[in-house]
Image (cartoon, rainbow, N blue to C red; front, side, top):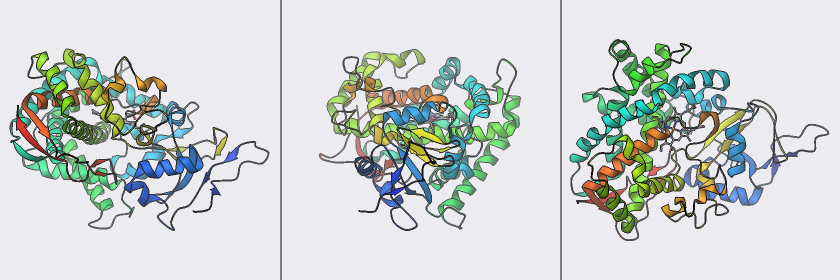
Length: 448
Ligand code: HEM
């Protein structure tokens, strides 16, 4: 077992403890086990070191702060101790710079107040109205038999995003834009973190340029003829005191938003559909709920009328948090749980891990949506035990959008298809970047 080494000496005379940890392998540290199996790796570290420890990851010295208390401390960020910009930029800065999640403190609050206008209730109602017929059109092309759900759902959510977000069809650009998104997202966890032609980092930079051009080319027309899509909403968004986004801001926010929305909802739908395939009694229960609603499409006022889907979605987000980690960097010396973390340290919190802690979640690997029923509400054990959308100032601004989209797609899937997987099938997860089914999630579809 590797020797335990302190992160940094504590200041003279301080009663604080140094953060314990180990370096892992030369050069790559603990990157590979963390990418291959983050939950087991973090569990081993938690059992060995406790909730705060450091190691080398992705070329950095990084402190893992594990469990709900750490989530709360970091996400609430009292005293502006942690920078989002410095944490996330290391991973995705070249590809998503000036995205709202990469802004800090006063500047972030300024942008968030403007962006909030595009996520008001009325705007959301409009997005759902656009989304529902699009979903139906997409699903109409799905045929019975064997289907890989990951690519099919990715295509569906991208089609939805281009309409609901951009207000237009991509036509023959679809594949190129899809590729650009995948490349920008994947580039963040490249092992080679500089541009080498053909490798991830270069592809990510090229993806960013493709997306910038796509939005910049459209922005004049959008400003001239606004509609109910998100791109228009960002162009029009203005606070009461008259603040609004520049063209460059709108483009950066659109690139970030498309990414933030596209992969996360696809992952949530994959997790849901996987568990519902393994547990047909749950699939039937949700289908009955959707049939009882008696509507082919969901409208905004229907969202709370499907309690089973609501619980199942929460459970899917617990079992597979689409944003598994949230990196930050300390901008001041931090004291946490008696430990000393100096300014300039990269830290990480890990919803993926928190959601699998048996200390908080009985039988954590089991798909059990009833955990979230009024009778049980296991998430109430700690306000930061269930954190798929983060918390504090950077809490996901699109969480209601995500809820709408997942419920809307699932409702239509339930009415149209039954789906199953072979007895004993377990979905392998590719956790190198955001967690996705490594085999594309093959299922058998039959019409209802
Ligand atoms: C199930 C789907 C989703 C999940 C699990 C999710 C998760 C998250 C998480 C964990 C964060 C916080 C990251 C941090 O603090 O470091 C976040 C931020 C954000 N999300 Fe989501 N998200 C989802 C869907 C969406 C959608 C659909 C949109 C847009 C339509 C969106 C837009 C954003 C934005 C703009 C931020 C940054 C907010 C800020 O920094 O102020 N997300 N999301």
